[in-house]
Amino acid sequence: MNTLQDLIKKYASQYKEQVVEWRRHIHSHPELSGEEKNTSLFIQKVLGELGIPFVNDVSDYAVIGKIEGAHTGPVIALRADMDALPIHEITGLPFASQNEGVMHACGHDSHIAILLGAAAILQSIKDQLHGTVKLIFQPSEEEALFPGAQGIVDSGILDDVDEIYGLHVWPQLPVGTVGLKKGNLMAASDHFLVHIKGKSTHGAEPHNGVDAIVAAANWIVNVESMVARETNPMENLVCTIGVINGGDRYNVGCGDVYLEGTCRTYAPEKRDYIERRLGESLQALDVMFKTESTLDYKRGHGATINNPEAIDYATSIVEKYLGKDAVVHPEFPS
Image (tube, one colour):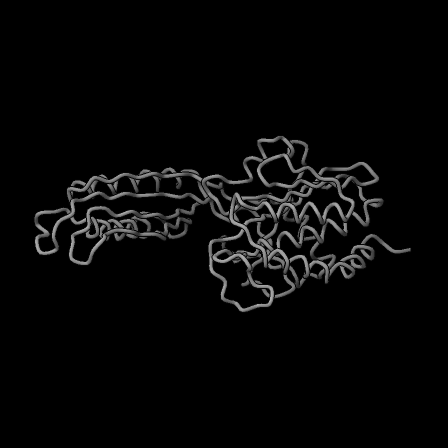
């Protein structure tokens, strides 16, 4: 008689090429946060073909599948994100993005395919399962301001879930290994927008204006100094300014600069600290440069903090199926 472990390995081998095919299809048809209509329809199609019931009216383009085992037990959720990024793909792969300017550059295509593969295996062995598995396909993970996870949580569909597991592909890990870490794993993600308003003037008469570019340059350096000099290097805090726009002509002093960035932290008090200090630094900037600055700080996803008992359990499963050498414990969170 085949053990459950034998059956899982059998079906994993059986669905391996199908998972690759699913992943390549999804990679070829990426969709941005909040626009995952066709991705959602594809997931629904596959779940339907597998005979897995699902609902699609929980939140935006989310899809929630459900596999009920033949025996009583806990309710476990498995989660994958669905959205792509506004990036132009230049890989030249035969399954490269067909949606110009959009690419699955963060691995969510793999996440979807992996969860569909897990669903196929679990559906095949549901007569041996003790409990229920909910399959959570989450839209808008990349959108920190309107995270798709919140709508799913607010719907109540997770209220009866005992444990939830997710994963993320990670190029730095050796092939065939699984990274598992207790506690902090991935940081909270906040988004800020800054407008530094000066006064435009002719490039030959900078003394008659307020140069917003010079002010912005000073502010950027100040932000870097705050993180480097006010934060304990053993505590995790990163601020990155990814967008800066300003000026209309090479010989005209710039009157307005717009910046966007992100702050990543683990501790709630660090989120409070950096939001406060960004505001204070802009107030000081206005005094020094006679600018008028505004800060719009928006809090997005909270930090991923793994339950120690769940990590112990996951570790035992990886060791059982892949061997002890397959387990990697990252020292530092992301």
